[in-house]
Length: 114
Length: 115
Image 1 (spheres, helix red, strand yellow):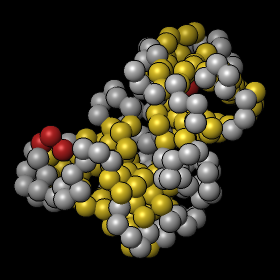
Image 2 (image 1 turned 30 degrees about the vertical axis):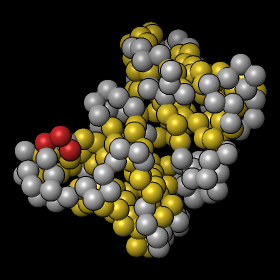
Image 3 (image 1 turned 135 degrees about the vertical axis):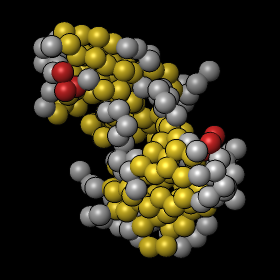
Image 4 (image 1 turned 90 degrees about the vertical axis):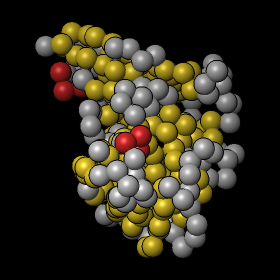
């Protein structure tokens, strides 16, 4: 079993809909959680970074963390065709010596249709 | 956010040659940088952790003599793929963080094609 599970999709939604993405994890030592957006043939772009359980909002993006359930989510409101990309969740184990070493989910491909 | 730049963005080489990829942190200093490899439609695989002024730390299964990493300054890390073969063709991405525990920023990636 992978440490971080993420549905590969593709997830297809109409423009304006809410995109709902999630990841589950098994390592309770994961304390930092990130969401990245990656367009084809480009490097990942950091969208959201959270530490504690609860919600964090930034513009059209809301990140949720539920450490008790080992479950994180990303919601994209008012989705646009330009949001079509692969979304990767990533987590950091605070106990590991290599400070910023991340464990990634497999990524979910999202397609927003105009 | 912080800016991490990679060069070249795309390189094609013949089998048996060596290729160097540069990773620069443009607006911050990074004592640690990370090198990832990504195959088509797959997630990122960490190859090694580059440490300024000391040897890189390689992940299990990554050949350190094949993938040479040098972190000569606080803003530059290089990855050299030595004696490249077609199976080394991939998308290589570096990352770095301007702060301690959290935000990690990625370069634009370098696509290597070995003929």
